[in-house]
Each structure stands twice: as structure tokens, then as C-alpha cells.
Image (tube, rainbow, N blue to C red; front, side):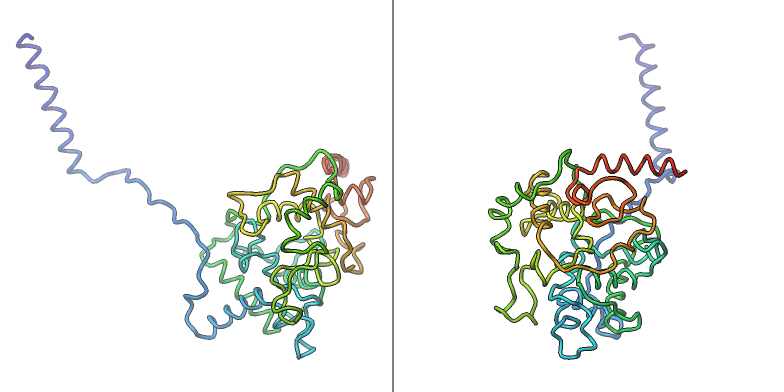
Length: 331
């Protein structure tokens, strides 16, 4: 190697070292931004035992043991708001903290919000009472009732640290692909017998806590019959119910590891919803704008020409396409 080349390489190395040294002494002008903190469900047990902490705990208890405080068998008749012996946690799993198990976290800031079912804005109290009248087959609670205020306080606590308009992952029941055929109660029957009946019983009656004492609610909730959600409840709609069981059933399943195939979930849901349940009067007044009525609402009237049977079991693709055309024509 010639002397000129050696001198050139040495100069290049010295220049590189001087530049690195200078850079080390200068503050970074583009420091990496700190990682965005991950939101987690707050722990009720960490609250102090003051008035607020006790109210939030009461709200959680109302969610997990609804039948004890406002069920149809409580001693004080004025507190009998729920019409069945279910608990809110039968649908809002793990006291409303499970992803895709109809969680309650992150909801408080969404209210008031527009409701297609009523055709106007509703408060969070209105939304809770919708569950009380439909899922719990009962009657509305006054907004100033201690039980209502406790449930609201619990939902608000579960929304701690959620920014206005922030949408947390895991809301609702999840979304699996829809079938291009009608969901089949006949196909669902043997699936229910082999997968679901062990817990929910072959007659869909569920398993009571402490034997036959209905005042103590259910270890496993009934799925049809007189002591379950009525036909106006969200769970009475196939899309909601099928997605719920796909991501949560059998017991112990979660969205990371579904146990039911899509088809099996649709057919089991169809079988369950083919059975009788309490009727809610006045359903014909739901969804005053019929173009905003969910395609799986199992009761009329409808804006389209499809039958109640198809609205209940699908296939929903043709209904969705027809509604889209009608909305386009309206505007």
C-alpha cells in the first residue's frame, strides 16, 4: 500500500472519530418519544374504603350478584327492578372487564349518545335501564336510586384514564365472518347437546347456585325459558349472540383462542334463539327510522321486504344490500 493511500485512510479515520466525539457531547435534537402507556382495567380493590370507594364496590356487587340486591325475590318489593334471577355479569363477563365479553370499561365517556333504537340521545342511566327492561326482563330504576348511582360509579371507575373519544380494543362481542346461508337450529341442536348442555343443561335451564334457591341466582345462566333475557334484548339478536359465544364459550375461552368454529357458533346461537323466552311489549316502536334497524332484529316492522325468519337467522348479506340501496335512494 502506498504512503499516499495510508495518509488518506488515517485522515479519514481521524475525521470520523472527531465527529463521533462531537456528537456524543451534543444533546440529542430528536430524542425518541416515550412509548405510549398501555391502558389497563383499574383495580377496584385498590380503592380506599371511603364513600366513593364503597359506592364503586357496591356497583361491582350489583353487576356480579344483581339478583341479591334488585332481583325479583328481594324482601323489599320496591327494590325488585330485575324481573329474572340473572346477574349483569352473565352477559358482561368478569364484572364487565373481559375483552369481547361485552365489557363495561371505557364506556362512560360515550354518553350521552344517539340511540337508533329510541331515535334520540340517551344517557348512561337510560342505557342501563334498557338492559334492566330487556336483558333482565324487569323495570327501569330511577336515576337517583342508590343502586343506579352505584352502577354508574362503577362504570365510570372502569373508564378511569380513558380519554374522551378514545376507543379501547376489545369492545362489544367481536366480529366473525357471516354465513352465506341461514344459521340452522337443526344443525345447532346436536352441537348444543355435545358442547353446551353439560353446563346450561339440555333444557336450557342453567345451573342454580345452592340448589333450587332462586334468590341466590345461577352458577350457569339459563338460555331460554321464563327466567332469562326477553325477546327485545341485544342477546336475542343472532349476530350479537353468535359472536358472544364464539369468543367466550365454552367456559374459559377467550378471543385469543376460540374453541368454536364460525359455523358452529352461528348454528348453536340459532338453536338457542329458536326457543321461547319472555316477550317485551311494544317492540314495534323500536327503531323509528327503520333504515337504521339492525339486520338481525328478530321482530318487525322492517324497511325491506325480507321475512322475519330471514331477519332472525339470515343470511344477512341480501338484507344489508337492500338496506344500503334504500338509504342511497333516500338521500
